[in-house]
Amino acid sequence: MTTTRVVLPGVVDPEGLRLEQVDLPAPTTGQVLVAVEASGISYAEQQMRRGRYYDQPAFPFTPGYDLVGTVVDLGPGTPAGLLGQRVAAMTKTGGWATHALVPAEDLVPVPAGVDPAEASTLVVNGITAWSMLHRSAKVRAGQTVLVHGANGGVGTVLAQLARDAGARVIGTASPRHHDALRDLGVEPVDYRGDVEAQVRALAPDGVDAVFDHVGGAGLFASHRLLRRGGTLVSYGTAATRDGSGSPTWPILKLMARLAWWNVRPDGRRATFFNVWAGRRNPARFQARIREDLGNVFARLADGRLTTHVAATFPLEEIVEAMRLAESRTIVGKVVLLPRGGGSAGR
Image (cartoon, rainbow, N blue to C red; front, top):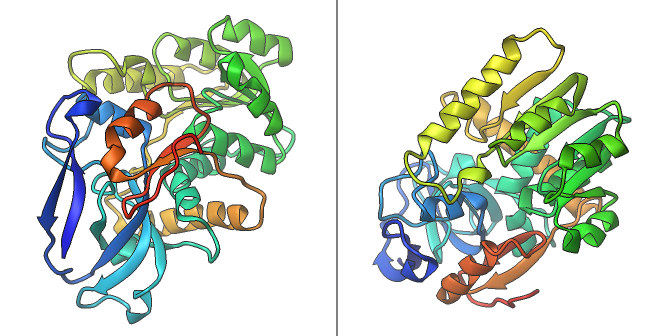
């Protein structure tokens, strides 16, 4: 089987991404071959392009944190019923290709009638949002939460799931995205202003949970905004995306800060969410992924959750796709359609 894939050769501008065709071996024991129909551009790939993702593989490699596609070949020991099924998988790398070899145990069924591009927006983002909301912060009906970057890929899903759980949602974004947030039932604040003062005006006693992917100096305001019993869930260091030096150092500093806050007896909790946590226990990890993504897909199928596909592109237009994804002008997620198609601006 020949596959066309995107290659990230090193720290390059988007124009440095290249396409190549390679032969894939037949799937081995426990593997399946997936004809990829959609794969999203996540914030992780934006960091990888800069060499800033803290556990990315060595260059060169094919990015693609997730994929949605159809199983077209089976390796030994895989269930025969998988053949022809539409599935999703969280891959970390390898999704930006026309075909990919994936462990069968990592697959999650995609509900019938769900568009592949829409499903792709929910693989990494949906697992992250559901896990942070229900496992890390344990948000309940009647609580108030603050979502930073509520117009982004994770943010739009997180805001909707929080509303579905009965929570009040305050979200940061630039003013051009505020109407879109209001349509989701989110109370918007301008991230470029004094976020702490704006949130205090809406929630004088503070909030029950803050979801912060930015890190940096703003993390202190996120912690101060928690009321007693609240939880800060940190899940990234976007403030350091364009920095230099070790990509690990910002994470280590962040973890140290969260640990320090947790030893202070002030009734507030701070935690770091890593979507790959628990991987050392594969059975438990895979069960969690299937459950959480299954819950998200179910809400998409029954209309309680809507996706935000900012635009779709074929692999051949990866440069334009990457530039749009990094532009900070979109609501939702840019998705690659490796098997053809695409409509920029969708």
